[in-house]
Image (cartoon, rainbow, N blue to C red):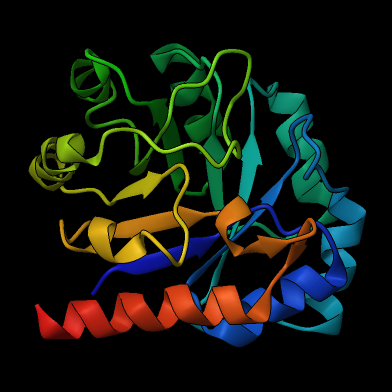
Length: 216
């Protein structure tokens, strides 16, 4: 089935809605962003409303130092590190050597994105393919041309790692994306109303992901 990552949770209320949806991946952003949160706050959310056994907390960073990741992990639980910047293979290897957690790499959609995925083969534990927007590292609500999705799915399968598709995924268009049967979809702004998580939008996307997957 297609997995769902609900990213950009910015409050206890957002986080609780994401946990209660049953989505297997819940994302929080520690990089500079309108959705940036403090690790101390995330720790309180988790204590007040523990995730279900199958759920994983994904921490999103942009070009972080080892010290920054250490600081965050000293203050809250994370199950997966997602790197959303211009991190090199050497940087990622150093991070993986220091922290015993899976590391995902976000890659913007562009003509050489698959070649970039190949550079990380054997290093990265998962990919997030997002729209390329000048001056932004994600969370823009903008989609890319999804006709390229099969190429990314196939490369992820070849490497034996999950590949999530992000960028402008909403209840109104998620069926089109699910038709390509990606391993996962990564949703942020598409589950928000007035900059807060919207239970109806979350439920619609999670339900459709399960329904379409079962039909296929």
